[in-house]
Image (cartoon, rainbow, N blue to C red; front, side, top):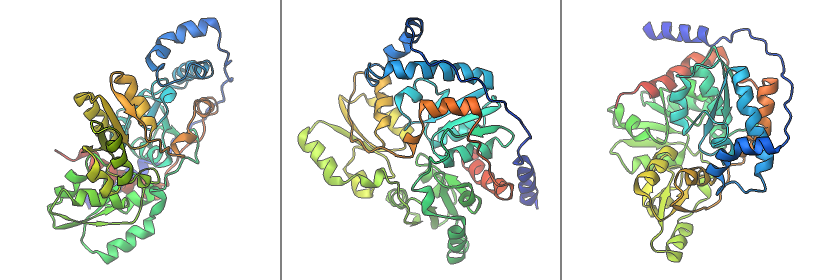
Length: 357
């Protein structure tokens, strides 16, 4: 009964507050000598990953967005796969899915602009039901999230009665609502082993499930969902890097196929990969993940040479400075979650966030 009461309270909280926003005037976007001087310190920071020919276009947008954030009482959350001008220019909080989920619960601003893909914006809304959550381009989806539905999860529960369902945060709110708990690539192993049972479902990323299964005695039952960025990497590609340079260091994301992870020197979440580079300072490294992350990490690690296997996420790249600015001016696109599923989905995310080490 306590759980039912908790679900009722969460569902009530998920009902959006009635708020009306007026469009703002679109700011001037001229790259003047005065603006160039004001923005020079930021460009000094990012100059080796943002070409000088592009900076006069980016700078007015960055300046305008940072001003409008204050007018809108808005905060920008940006995933590690965003391009450097977004990641270093306008983001207030940057990180991987787990970091963004945690930080979303601490946000004081009344408006959240999610610079990532749609499931991330949904997660922010779940955790902040009374706030306005915007995504600059509602078409920013995810091949992995699209690989499974709530109906699929209900069928899995029928097929595997009593088996815990651990759902990757890279899923829709509908799928989260049918799950016992969420996970990310950085905490999946801990969550798999936290149940103390001999088998679990870990969905929908097949490769993440297989890579976790290689690290535990728990039987991990997978679903055949894949990230269209990470599934394209091959072990042959990584072996060629080592052939070209035997001293190169390779670190890979666990959404890659197990044969790719087996060729890597380290495997971890995006935040884990970033921390590994900062700690180990390899002379030359390949980050086997979405290639914008290498640019973002390079800004903070100028002495490390990054070899970029450039697999871009087409969905992440739908987010641009232009549509971030439009989002703040016109307050679009607002992300809503059906109250009928929001409470249950929120519980699955909160169980992940609140899980003790």
